[in-house]
Image 1: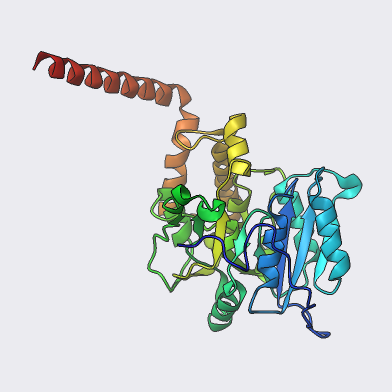
Image 2: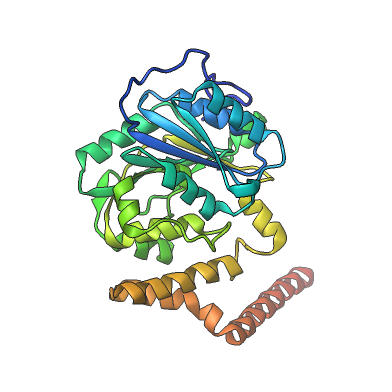
Length: 333
């Protein structure tokens, strides 16, 4: 079970001993965006300071917070100026997740880029293991593994059994050619990586393009991941080196509450991503048949809304009739 540990317990702080890196540039730029993240941001920062790989810089990007997370980020930037930087939009504006990640990327100096949202946690070997893989596979633009969905952070025994690890959907510890991963993500045969699960070469992000800033919340990471998986080789490893915290105040939960996102069925966020992807494939001249078929299949419910609504209504009626007949049969017997 992966629950609280001495290095990742809520409220833990980085060691008072300042890590020494000399004058060398950071190997990894870690971008942490946050919006009112005071509940967990110190734990995220502590997990970076606990890394066995010490050649990193941490870019704390404030997306217009109104709670104490801004003060927390400024404190660490002031205390560790050689390792931590605080960034914000002009006038402390709220610009959304994509614009905030792009702000971090514009300031990144590392050869590699990693992302760590303020409510997630790295395990101590995260950077060391993934840097080694990109060093061993220079043809890979990105590496990711089996992130753990982290319910047990709460410390409640009943949450321990709810932790689960993302399904890779491909042979683990292997180099995947484009556009195989993109096809499998759309088919549902593989889960796209979590944001905290990746390590990416900065030069490939610069060549392929950053995040789309009109994606303020949901599916914003898919834009970058699909750009990479469509045109570059990706190494998928079997290790679990990061914890994706599950909690009631997450961006996903907020999108569900607002109606922007639904776990089952069609939703506005997924439609927006699919329409971007469809246009991107056309602009880039990508004509892989399996990929185009998968995109067209996923877009059908949005292109033929009335038909799919009628089919859905019929299916719901059929299920109700079946339940009624089963109930009646039980009563008769």
